Image (cartoon, rainbow, N blue to C red; front, side, top):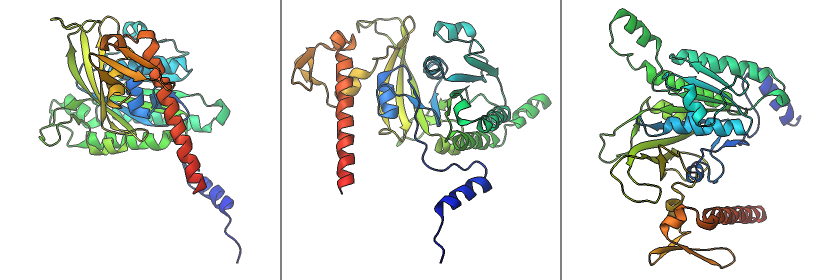
Amino acid sequence: MRPFDISRFRKDITKSIPGVSVGFHDPTDWISTGNYALNYLISGDFKKGVPLGKVTVFAGESGSGKSFLASGNLVKNAQLQNIYVILIDSENALDEKWLHALDIDTSEEKMLKLSMSMIDDVAKTISDFMKTYRELAAEDRPKVLFVIDSLGMLLTPTDINQFEAGELKGDMGRKPKALAALVRNCVNMLGSMNVGLVATNHTYASQDPYNPDQILSGGQGFIFASSIIVAMKKLKLKEDEEGNKVTEVLGIRSGCKVMKTRYSKPFEDVELRIPYESGLDPYSGLFGLLEKNGLIAKDGNRYVYVDLKGNTHKYFRKEWNRNENGIFDLVMSEFSSKLESTQHTNSETQDEE
């Protein structure tokens, strides 16, 4: 009997079934959210945020900061890594002046900004782009990030037809199915390519007393298909830079819970403070994250960290939040080293077994 030829089978299946890719396609390019704590909760790494090749959704109520992260920080940091951005605006809300204030380059060499209202048009745009993209030689394919702000405002043909007829009866559940199809297709198309998709979406309050988390609009199919989901909740920021209570609202406190991720522990949360004047501090929320992981211990009215050399670092909470003497950078560096050492040891143990 002739032996089974796996190499021939591999070649035959990739030729006979369009779109099939062989092997693993772990992410190689990550874009920072602009916040170390949120990066860690999403990816398990303080410096990595969302990956190319995956679909990431930031969902929250109006004013929770989802556009600030998706259309602001992620776009800016993508451009710093020479990743081309295709920004799809369905809300007609992304002004060029606002983007410039966030240090985003809106020139055609760095970004293509599209205004679209139809789910079908978004799907066709991404599909047509990926067909052309796949025809390029691997070395000629640029790194690209699609940003859709937002999924919740996209319309179906039924919405348009009813509006023109003056009979707004709803789309009979077509939108959740269309969104699920859009996300599922994007997950399959982008998986083996250096192309990522980040989208924002709306949430509404849960009526289930046993599950108080915000509910994402768009149906369960879209949620199952997405690679990473971050739910965001809006709170008022009534503290100054020194942490003193004030009566006026100085910004927003955005409660972020990572509902879905394959790169870290899900359902972990962090509160980010985004002052109107200065924007998001990259260290915001980091103190709480480190304390929760047992890296910082309370000693009287101060908090202590013992580094890998046995040196003790003791600061008041305000001093920690000011990153006194670069203490946050030291803790993150040593914590990352510990994780790498543990992973290396586990890998060696598995190899020996």
